[in-house]
Length: 372
Image (cartoon, rainbow, N blue to C red):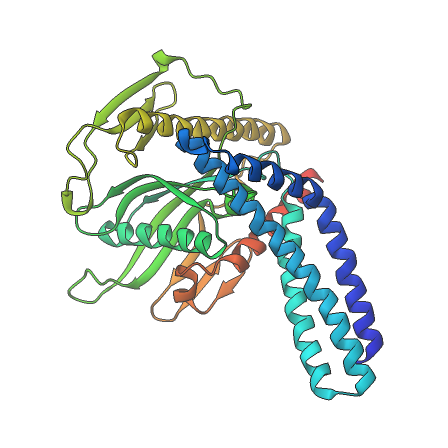
């Protein structure tokens, strides 16, 4: 690639990074990191374990985001130096290395730029993810467990803390349902495009005749509420049930009735929490999940009313949004964006960024079309 092309490409990347810096408000991010660092250094931090986990998780996530931005800025600067030296010395190997690095940096900047598209009311929030096995029997339960692992592996790769609230195991294998939080800035905006019905096609490992099986699992993503959110639930609207936590195969996790199930009577919304040993802690955690789901329900009702006013009676997202096909060929394909991967194993191991970026861009386009 000729020098002038490098110059133009680097200037374009730097301009994009300046825009990203403004949207992310990097200065505010640094100030919050400093404030959280002071809180972490406080000797009484762990007197309130729930708050301590929130503070340390938020600090870790923000530090990761800032490191990602600064490291990318440094790579662009280093690329300029490499190009300059390569051109001065006429070093073909250096120029080839620069061309390869330019392609990698462009991809990384595009991925970071997607963050600037997350400007919805709750996009900056942390995320509560619920997975429920659908049609397909034991294969569906196994699929639900694979999806939970997929999202937790994605979070681990990005160093995002995961907090499991509830796991309901199926009798033979897999999960009936699970609810967990991903504590990271913009986790809701990023993962909200995963909401919908996921479909798996494979040779069932649970079928002794080796037949192909189609199974389904539902994914729900809602934002974690903050204390400033006004969701008041009268006590008479909630039924509280307590029971013993259970593990795989019916194994007892503890011998006390510490698990809590909350039912919101007016809407029929049910949430459970069994992660903590204390019934009070489980009830508090379940209330967090319940309020988040009720807020999402309220927003969905408001959106439905707006759609009705616009004359749009069709939902924006179809029930079946992604196919995972393992037989007779291997592919994972998003039915909304057309984005696909020929490596299902990598996807199930958390390689989701391409699908998430495509989904966010697709949603932005759909929102613009709706506005017009």
